[in-house]
Length: 464
Image 1 (cartoon, one colour):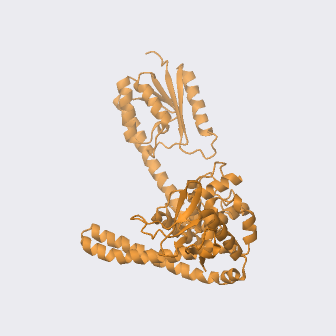
Image 2 (image 1 turned 30 degrees about the horizontal axis):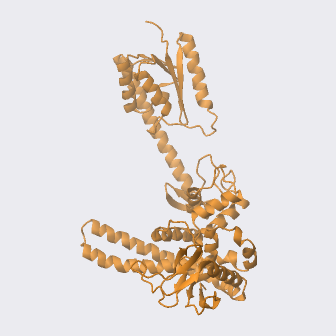
């Protein structure tokens, strides 16, 4: 029988944490040596590095080799060992079927040859695959148990990437990055969007751990990470305290989670265009003022009609109103009143924790109610009668949490009104709005008495 003239060499290694491909290089060298000793010509090499043959994940190079065998382009396969080819019996059967249809019988390894065309050869290959599958399952279970144990002890997990905020040992806090995390958390709780914060970090040249650009998804992942609060998670569940120092408090993490839920509930996705959107009220009917533009003038108006149901009797120039209220907000940050607020602010921490617990219980009751309706234990009318008051309570708790979240941002703002004023024009609109909302609950705009802008028409209602 003629020697193969278009052999395929396949190499694979499950884990390559160094990224240097040393394991597959050794396999390739041994396979090339085997081909040379037998006088086989190698047509191509197929390498899947850092890919498991047991997990069921795609192996692109293995699939390419199988396609070439199927198309009759390869007349032999060389692997270091059969478990490099596959560790799954079902995959071996697929490989055998492809080889049989293509007429390929030469499968050589550094330890033994496999004749897939004979009963004995196929039997031995099946035994090898079954043993490899059992060993992989046993190894996977040992790894899972070790990972679970490490998590329960609060130790850091695996992975080659350094977590943001910590050094390479994944335990020591990186002071510069920790400061960025605290800033980001404060800004997010205050109402800024993840997109706006990510854009700001990117413009400032703040690096990520990998050198990739900041994205809203990257920032959201950082904000939601239990790690920065000194908590250890495993398989999506928090299992206890970690051995590393926290960068933010558990209470701040809860504020982040609550803020995220409030953003989801509000459904706000459109980028902000007006600084005071949602903050102005009509002095005649009490309704909200809406942003509007007429030719080259931006305005806030009390809109009438079925969609807004306002009286239509109030209008104010947007730039002038924004300028005046911004000045009032920044001035208020430097007043003794705000210092007094800050002194008593931390007394609200217990209130925040209590409200968070209350919110969690209400959500639990909502889930139980939905499950009862789903199982047919209650009718639609009963479900609705029980759901409505729960939703009303949940809305009330969210409103209180929102107010407390806004006040928590004052730590960084009180006493810095002048500094904020100097850098105001360089801030994003989202950032400016977050600062304003931390101090201003809303402002009532009263009817005009003339054609000139009159700041006396604006009556602020401060958060605290």
